[in-house]
Image (cartoon, rainbow, N blue to C red; front, side, top):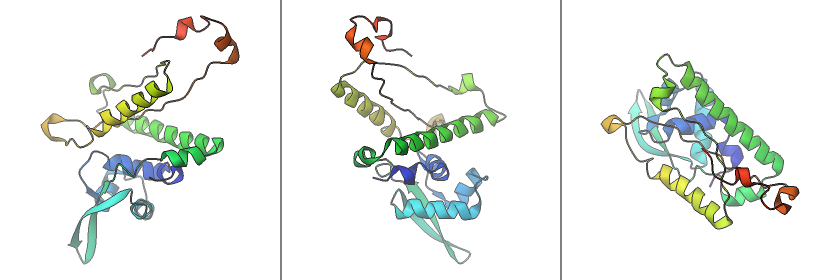
Length: 194
């Protein structure tokens, strides 16, 4: 598993997102898809991700006297592990969520800036809901989310598939002391919402 500092850097997040669920890409192909990232910056961050074994080299070929490598994301390594999450301070989590949110906002901005963007037809979705869960139910929910995404990550663009970036955040929302003590105090928020 990688650390939050490694994975949640805005440039590295964009590189990983570009490779997730896609065919392996070379650095030149990544530069075509991410033209706003300077070449030296791109090479540096690919090297960092490869050294951390988040990216793996899946092909090499000689092009004009140099070796061109194709990369893919090792999804099992592209996660902040539980051990790392437990050692992170509150400020570490705040910084990680800020980086995650910034990348999410940038993704939305790039999509909405496209001339062909049609949010309704393209299925643009953003939702927040609430559910009262035991620890076991919560663990099951997280596992369901992860399984739903990872089982579809191996799909290819064949058969008219469109690539979608799936992001979600789960935030504990423990009720205050007063609402725990008063029966029925949360009656209007007990149901999960969409």
